[in-house]
View 1 (tube, rainbow, N blue to C red):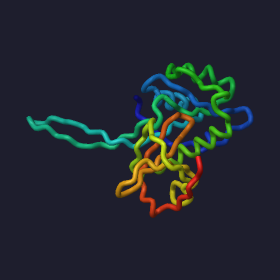
View 2: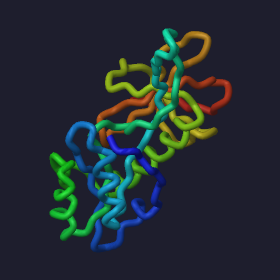
View 3: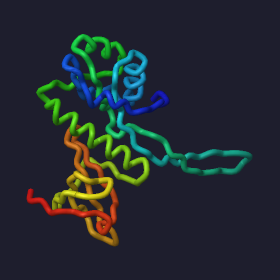
Length: 193
């Protein structure tokens, strides 16, 4: 995967009349290649990232060393959000990184932009707080978090130990995020499912 020279472009959230934001499904490990291609061709794209600890091993002078390094990885493997004009579709396919562009029947534009805002909020929080990304979460009680950095996000109680583990669902990519939070720090209102 190419090095991700990353910055978030707010323009992804404000498409003009002749533009549409699409979810693009890439070949495995080609998210960064598509993001770099779009950036070099002036096409606005958004590749949500998450921090991940990587355990590295090195041998030096007959000694074995282990250390951890923080790396940025795509939050949703094989998915990139791209803002394009109708005539740019063939141009992004020239990147050789795309499997398909999900159609407008898959995502309503207003809902997709709302979900991108939520993904951006989760991405921002993930840079300062440890999150676990998981595709399978058991059912639990549903709550609306009304304060703190998670304000406006629905959560499901996963398990209750010393702390509560809450999950936030991002339906646009069928993935759930698990975050460990202290429930005493947030105002939460139960919601019926």
